[in-house]
Length: 417
Image 1 (spheres, rainbow, N blue to C red):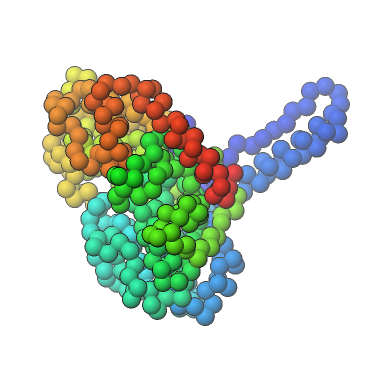
Image 2 (cartoon, rainbow, N blue to C red):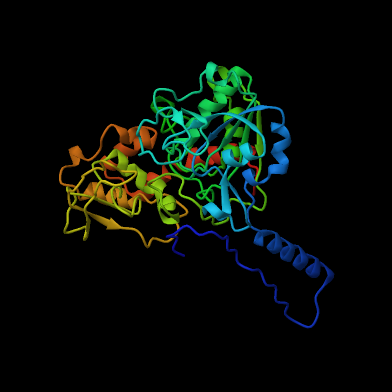
């Protein structure tokens, strides 16, 4: 199955039980009924945490509220989770219209309305739609300050994650939890699906390489929703000095990790569709090399290429241009040779072969990696393994012990099957 464009509906296979023979035992009938009931349940659309207003509006009554949000912080008006303006409202707009005393907004990477480039500092300002004061959490100030929380009785966190360690929304979550714990402000997480929640994979981060693109000893693909991840941060005492955040998660309904989920709105400017999100854990490694990963094209994180790759081996070519979300992409206006992955089937593991092929067919191997690669990889080992000529199978085999321990720990924090 090819995942190329965001869909506004959730499609699940119907389960049909065909009985052979002339009779069915009582046990068989009971088992059939259970399976059919499960199929009916799975056919229901996912109800995201933000839509479960009956579960959290009472918690906001009479409270001064802050919100960590962006363009994905939506309440949907229909069961199709349609993000179009006529079928959805921003959480801030909805809460204000309901009389909730919203005092402050906080913006992660890409800004409160999701228009800033990757890595671009987001400045403080005002939300153009509501006039609400917005404090940036992506710039010099990555952790809310005490004075920024002094008029807040409860803080809401509602961001659409994509399930990768280097996607910085989980780092913002860490710092928000830490600030809430230190200032005794309860944190309310409105949970959303993880579109890469159907698997875990990649090397475990070495604490020596801790950074904003990798803060915790987890694999590249962590397999958790934001609510589950917050529980893990608390449970593993990863916050400074082991402080604990007063945390409440508004869980989704009708969701399980193995469900294919199509995001109704892109979570950041350079993840435009399902395919890019699914390929992101594999292709983001190129951000730490001299290879462009589709920024400056319409196929961000669905193609890769470089002027330094062998055009005899790589028969696909494109030229990055300045565009919204990538004003100065790598190799701007230079012809890049690489691969078109827009028709790739949905992955359930990291594909290292593309990275290995690029390294094997680059013009000058000494200039392939940059200092950012080890931060993305979460350590020095992956680069060493590639430079030493290990195969993809040999490299992934080296991850298995760490993954096994992580998956055992992960079980303690799951809210969904």
